Image 1 (cartoon, rainbow, N blue to C red):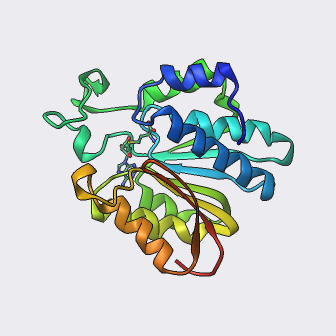
Image 2: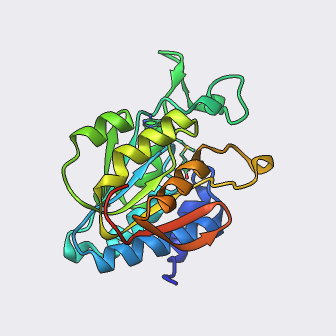
Length: 218
Ligand SMILES: C[S@@+](CC[C@H](N)C(=O)[O-])C[C@H]1O[C@@H](n2cnc3c(N)ncnc32)[C@H](O)[C@@H]1O
């Protein structure tokens, strides 16, 4: 497995976010592997939040910089349903006092600056389906960690999975086969990818599932 530099691990652990270290290491390994096998194709994340997982794609992109690999991360930065005021994952420090809405973009930019990865990441502020609709390049890796409702997870899959290159990688976070452990939308997307015959499972690290494109379609 690709090793994470202690400085990168420290930046990851210092960043606000939801990904535990073991899942992060698996994401980093998948991104490093995809970047090495598919030189020059971007590594794309849906769901930047404050940049915790972005650091890992950035580290993989930096290691493959000689071949032109870049990390891309997409988020409208207004937070998912469960991050809104009154909900379980709300963080009041992420509310823009002027407009009264969540805004994770400033914190994300600080995270990336502190980690030293500003030159390795293209950050896109926008709604995932709108960005996917104008996207025109095959991707080495797509990491889906955006909205966790069926509407959003399905739109992320349908918008981005078609862009995964042959032999490219699809990673889905928060996959919980047992409803007692968490919401089912990412699990349904994961099942759909496998059942399509277009993707084959490569690794399982708790709720993080790494698949590889082994067929056409979605
Ligand atoms: C679970 S958080 C991402 C966590 C991050 N990957 C990490 O490891 O720390 C989900 C993010 O997806 C974003 N999001 C939800 N629905 C979205 C959509 N339709 N388009 C763009 N971003 C979306 C939210 O704003 C939120 O920041």
